[in-house]
Image (cartoon, rainbow, N blue to C red; front, side):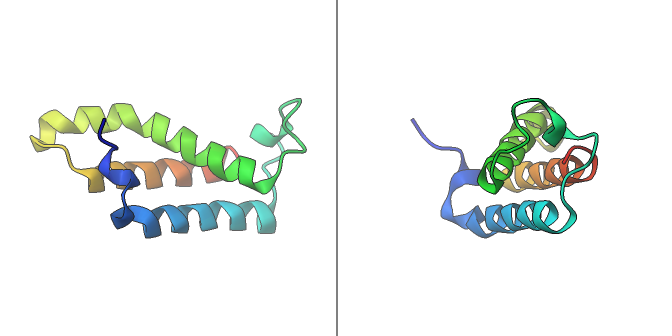
Length: 97
């Protein structure tokens, strides 16, 4: 089984920048008072939990849009998927955390 190209060494810096942005948002600005951190049972989770959770949600939420880009672009492009993931990380940081 072949791993998707977005998890290769080529995109490691991209993942690191997104993880850094998530950690800075959580450490400096805290959580959104009405956001995900107020869910019962999740309020005392650590920083790593929120980084992995936000990245996982961004990958899942961007997957349908990546599948829709296939007929438009006529090929699979991992850079488009990383851009979509980055957009969803930004949206999650603004509206959820």
